[in-house]
Amino acid sequence: MLADKIVNVEPISEGFSKDKKYSVHTYDGKQYFLRIFDFNQYGKMNIEYKALRQLVASDVPVMLPVEIGKLNEKFAMLNEPVINDNMGYIFYEWIIGVPFSQIMPQLSDFEKYLLGIEVGKILEKMHHTSSLNKHGDWYEVYIKRVHDMLARYNKTGIDLPHGSIAIRFFEENKHILKNRPQSFIHGDFSSGYMPVYITSSPPYFKIIDFGNAMFGDPIFDFHKLCLYSTSVPFYAAGVIDGYHSFNIPNYFWELFALYSSIEVLFLTSWAYQVSPKGYKAMARRAKQTISDYFKDMQCVVPSWYDSSLSKLSVQHRNGNVDILKKFLGN
Image (cartoon, helix red, strand yellow):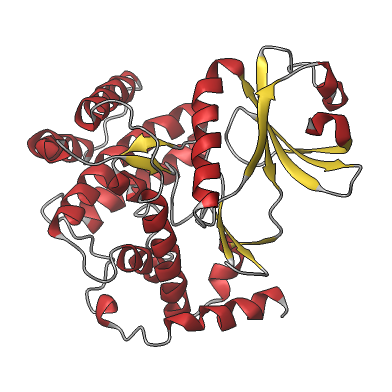
């Protein structure tokens, strides 16, 4: 048990999750990422644990969970009054590298596109590797999700002028959710907060932060790509192109527009309850997504996706290794 080996603990305060997070060192010189969660989430966390280990075994570069269990007296060194034996824990490998968000401002547009292609290929492999059983019919699951979130959205009293456009678009097009395939999905794959680390050795990328992971339609994993696409449109376009090997089917754009427009409303109501400052920023993004990118839902291909970009030569796409070396000091 890794708790027996811990010699040093450092709290990690980043992120919005209610879970407690730590950097821990063990007496054998190893470092791990420790996450403490409410034990009623154990079933969900155990599915994540099994799915991620399966992905790692299939050479998908995701963070490796090492151990999962229920908290006990051996975790007393955490010295947290809110922690008790009704909580669970999970240890992950500690990833040494550079967050994508740190290097992105230093890259050229074409370099951003190249890296997006590589990330898109990883995401595609992740979606098509996990063989764990799906959980319910996706159409029914997602319709319930939308109804529940609409109730919360309406309860806040928010009246976004473009909100009704997104809701109407969803109601008119929800039939495309029927018979969608399911896989293990990340759930928080945004182009602003990029859950990707650049590492100094192959495979050079690691997908992290699976706190919102679930089973669902693989295209749902793209729903946050619009949120920050004005700042990194080439990266976002690269992710889409790489995922589809530059052959994007029409159904992708239809689902992408549906998920992106309805989910941004719910992110706005969530931000309203969490932070006034965050709400204003998210409300602007909601308007941008619905009214600007999708032209009041008259177009399913967002305006930031430059169609000419997908036609760029990718003969140098393997040059991403040289790009990364600039930032890794190799």
